[in-house]
Image 1 (tube, rainbow, N blue to C red):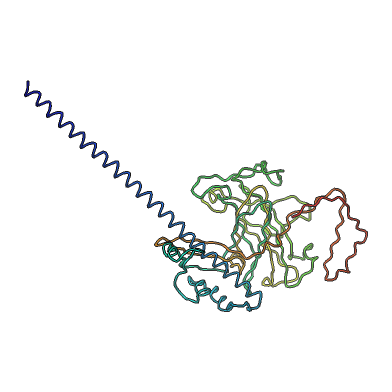
Image 2 (image 1 turned 45 degrees about the horizontal axis):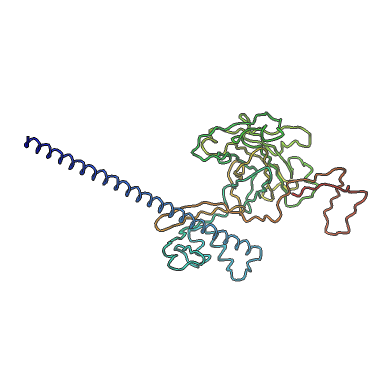
Length: 408
């Protein structure tokens, strides 16, 4: 009996040792896994912080590029006589489109990087941050014009300007992407078309379609030659015209090209132009609708190099981003000083981020009027274009009182 009891005791000891070893291994595995998870999260947080810091550095380069462009505009307006600014050197650096453009303008150097410092921070904090933008390229003459945020509340006015000596006779307009529907490029999406057929237009957005339905686009051309009269905007002269409007209706079946000469608003014909909008292009993240518009000749000139033109875009039923490309008989022509492209690379430690931005130096002090005057009763309109106030004569015009005015 004693031998048997001793054998049982030895067996109980082996089980205890096995339990201890297994528990130790389990605790070790859990501890190692927990430590790895902490280290991995720390690395991800550090990487995300560095990525954001590098992105901020690139944005700092974009802001400095805006400063340079604003200084160049000021130099041009003052005939290169801005105090404390070498306007000729500034313009030369901008035209070069090199990585060191901003270093040449602000630091007088042809290479190197620009350290990003926080305002009010100490030197040690800046060193620890280790942020800089390494390359900023500025392209003033872009191959296209891109913009977002076109809504029914505000039109966009785009100067159609090319370099001296060049001409164009076509405008390619593309609009509506997945981002306008609130979707990113990786999200599956299906383009939808208006619930009504042209020329029918619903009274509100609900009758048009959902978020993935392109808006109706209104394209208005305003142009002149080297000389013009105000009456030219109301008339046509052969194949020449200074003011035309087309309503572009998104459709499954339509055309990819129209002419502004097809503007038939004066005849009272309700016929918006159906533009084909492609589902596959939309699904792949591109612009769903694309149309090429041919421009008529400006009245009073046969030389298209003397064309001065503006394109006004408005939308109904949805918001959109768009892209404009100028062409001369199908050959793309660059815009000239209308919208600058800034390509900036930022750094934080050894991580780099690159940002591409479009910059415009337009003024918002006088926005293009969007509304009219709503009133109860009659309205007299008496317009004069003159440089002498005494020329004004109200005549028999008796403005009604109690009018309700809507400010643009």
